[in-house]
Length: 123
Image 1 (cartoon, rainbow, N blue to C red):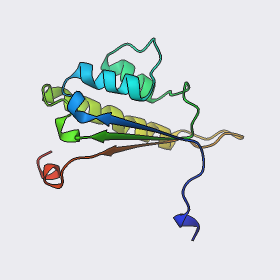
Image 2 (tube, rainbow, N blue to C red; image 1 turned 180 degrees about the horizontal axis):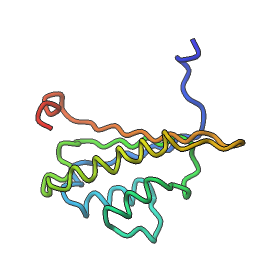
Image 3 (cartoon, one colour; image 1 turned 90 degrees about the vertical axis):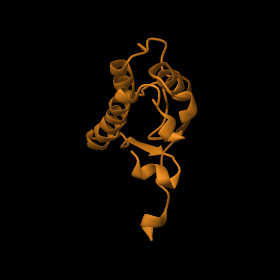
């Protein structure tokens, strides 16, 4: 039953409000606040992507990003929605594929998008 045990390590959970992420500024603000992004964060997509692949300022080995009302995310800028989803997917892939050096723990990065059941068929 080892699989039933929760993973070990320090967990950092960031919960964001999709209703406040209707445009890029709202997305950047939610990530800045929830992940305590450093002051040098550039408030653009490349800067967000870079920060999601770093996270050195947070002492944790497991990261969980939860976005409520995900259907509202970038609803005022739908062309940019794919950029955000790709950045999140790239971060998950980056952390999953990063080699673990001796004496280090594997870092995991997971994203959960919460939306009404019917919304999944629209996006």
